[in-house]
Length: 239
Image 1 (spheres, rainbow, N blue to C red):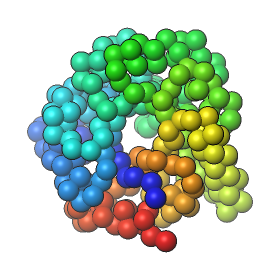
Image 2 (cartoon, rainbow, N blue to C red):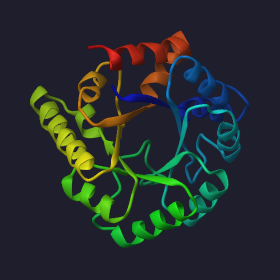
Image 3 (cartoon, rainbow, N blue to C red):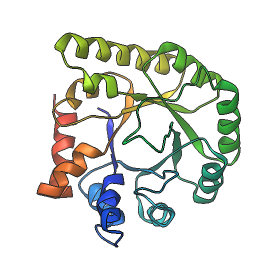
Image 4 (cartoon, rainbow, N blue to C red):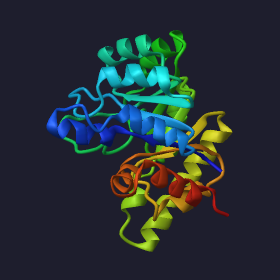
């Protein structure tokens, strides 16, 4: 079964609503790991709308499992990542206007630029993942960019309005995962996954990590981080 990595960005979103010191994403990450999460994910955005540099720096010291830093492919973020040295980074597209990440990076269109970014990060000793849509051409270009991993964007599957649409998107994810495995990429998946829709994705062979944030944090505000994480793990690991 895939590992569960918990994105704690939205604990910081609540904190930043009042520009105060609580709730603390560091505490949330520690509780998530104690509940069985295999790793922690944070996205340091250009506008610092939730996670901040200090959060990342403390997490680097206290996270026991995998620390995955999501970041835009910019000079500022490359410099920060080299100083932080997370277990790996995930390159993601970013627009100030978006509420959340809207899709994968277009590696086909940006191959030359992304190849340089991947080289600079790997040269510093950081493993690199690229967040991509479930498309065979994007997977192939990620390999050409020398990425260590890809994270398959599951958003279209989670947003499908019909069972037929859901099955079509699920098949696209399966094909992308299988190709990634064949081309020796480590494959992760995430975006929009919830307690209601994660099971089918978790059953796809070849996915190493499921990165889930909003749904777990939403439930945690009502029942606590421990129960929220354990419930998600039960669903992922159920036969």
